[in-house]
Image (cartoon, rainbow, N blue to C red):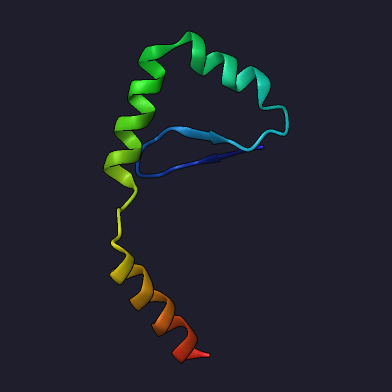
Length: 62
């Protein structure tokens, strides 16, 4: 099974057999750099204060 990110256009493989995927990363430094660059661009980084605010809003909404 795979999930595709509409933002990066790359596939996140949710396969249960991770060993071949890890070996692929070990053998492909360019892929590692590309995935890291996509993650840095696509995944927001939150401070602990921002995370705490999100939790507080969530629990207040219950």
